[in-house]
Image (cartoon, rainbow, N blue to C red; front, side, top):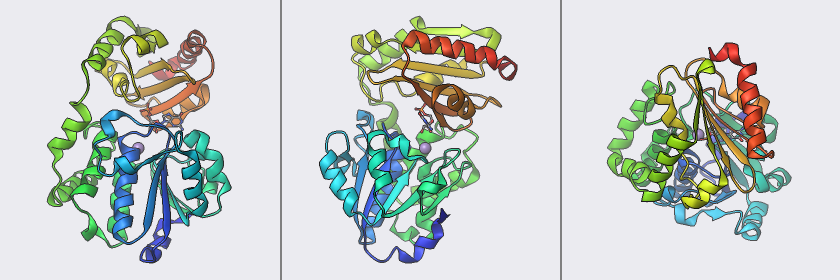
Length: 335
Ligand code: 5GP
Ligand code: MN
């Protein structure tokens, strides 16, 4: 993978561009893709944004979101775009398998593949150009850097600023995680000067849900939370029946994993959700417990040091047992 700056000189030649992100994209994946798409369109490129799956309703207000192609529902159209694309930007993931059913197609096409990502252990063989920087708060911050370093910061408008800000807010836990550098605060100051309305973004991201989601959160915290004090660990187990009862949709469970972190002394919080296709895990840690390695070792996953995800094809009972054994094995690191 060659440094991304080697494509700067080529940005002025209009191309067919596709931008893709990880499955079930979050605010950072969608925000960075939409910001980059709008920037490249302003430079005269023809751009399509493709998501491997659907995304949460609370992200649908993001400027440009209506144009995003869902690979699950529009595979033929998306494959045609991918066949014709000259540049493929891969944002907020670093191994093709994180795009699920789209991975095979992305591996097969021979266009120029460009990575912009901040997760651990990138598969650099899969990309021609790119930047992978695990110290960056978000892929949105990296897209902002890409626009500025290529010499086009003048093209950042209020719409691009909104998309970038949404991902930065989400991936920094509203500016609380250690990745919130002085560069991040400078970025926000610069976006404000471009017309960013930050309160509107916070309202759209955090204060725009239906009653069922809040009642679901209350139910899970009251009835589905186990605390393993000897391992400073909390586990939330969400059975399928809860998803049905509370009419839970994509995105409704996002953020749930953060609540138990408010309990004194807790180092690791895990949540497992019994989805149709798999048991989906999320992990959050404080301090020196490495969620990325833990998710990789036990749950076919990965991510960041303090925030990672994984999956299991086992039953919910069986994968919970795997988790309980895993925290016992990691007792020394959790105490
Ligand atoms: P979340 O728990 O919010 O789904 O994900 C936390 C972090 O881990 C995010 O940066 C996300 O992209 C990453 N992540 C989530 N699931 C997986 C997975 O199955 N594999 C890998 N490699 N990363 C994941
Ligand atoms: Mn991200």
